[in-house]
Length: 246
Image (tube, rainbow, N blue to C red; front, side, top):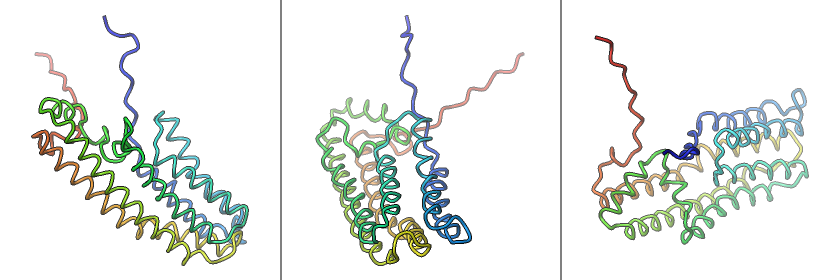
């Protein structure tokens, strides 16, 4: 007799394109071209720009019913940016915020290493990308669970290092870029420029280290399980074709 409740449905994959549009492209465009005196004005330009990442964060949580630590950090970052802007704090505090958030992520990754579900699983060992059931079964069959735990620990150190580098770069660039008083059109444009710099420039070293951590994870999983990369990766479900009637 089957369980009436059944297995918990798997969360829907995140729409990365929609995330980029709502979190980066639209807010940056509004703060760059829509916050002048002929547009929304500095105050409303900032508020309207921040509505998009806030709206996306709520939409994603409602649709997927899944808490995402990184998305939560981004959500808090948007709230802090809006609050600082309304309080008209100077650029120093925005630089502190931009540096503190990746630092907090790195510290959280390190702190979670002894937890039952370390954050590295959320960041790299993701069931949407990796066939977790197959990998876990192969690790159990070979008795390599401890080796895999050490592999995740090593990946955690790489991610924490990437976040530390990002924190230093974010703070330095924000101090150099955001120099105008808050509540002005120039301030909004500088904030928009900081978004682009973070996306195009600051993310490159961070993503390089993340890709290195992912490469080491895949290589280690292959050595511990004997699985190929194709077997480690999550494969799309095979569509069933109906047999035509004879």
